[in-house]
Image 1 (spheres, rainbow, N blue to C red):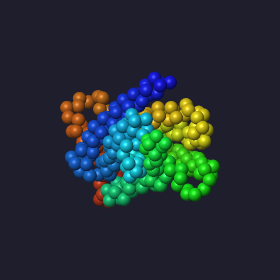
Image 2: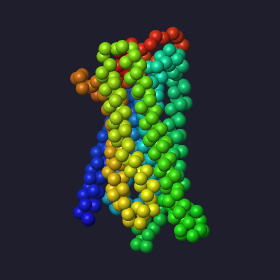
Image 3: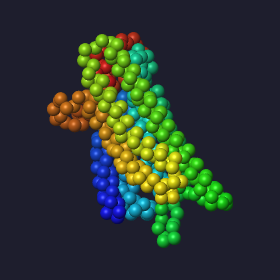
Image 4: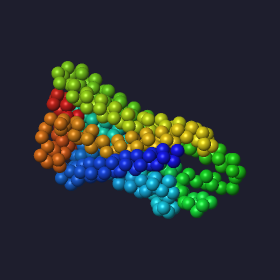
Length: 334
């Protein structure tokens, strides 16, 4: 049993380390190109915020890798217990919501190109881009409220849910409120943190695919393949984790009593897959979308800049003027 636990810890350490390195390098490159080398447009603003969320999430992983190596003991104190947990979860869910935001933006560009060209301005995007961040922060407010540090009988400090939050009531009532709160939080995260953005992505990409098919385009295979890959990768990475989290919160009492320990293992393993999605986003939304495998890359930053410019060009104007529906080439760049 001890050997299995050690092997799991080593696997999680290596997997999180890979995610951390790829996430920092890949998203850092996108931040540099979209934030400092390019003119600010709606599309580059979306990519910049998505890369920023994934970068901050990846940069926080080393702190939790240390905690995992210490068998969940928390060495950073009370303030960082709240700060690190809400930071990593807020950036994680902000990434998910921003992916849905990008899907919605692209859907509007394809379905309503005239409106998009006349009203899809940078100033409006700057106001709306705050919504995914606020939604992610609100979703994780329970962490700020309930999480704290506590010391066990052996003097070990942990950062966990504060079961004494409700004050001077019986232990049984505290436990009942704890399990109820955990269940509510788990359901909210599954519905708002997964089902909602996944539904938006699926609907938007379905509408885009239908528009491409209805236009009678000959070369629609690549755009459909890209859109399918983007949606499928998000679903594959996130659904197992969200499902295991939901089951774990629904069975919180049984898990606390030593039953269904397999759920804790599954949460750790599927969480690694969900975390890995944060370093896939630069490839899925930039490289794959621009068919990089068929062009020789002499300069990665230059290629990134070209990809983002091509993607944003059709509807980046802020001046009101007439517009025609996107051409086949423009839709293939979506």
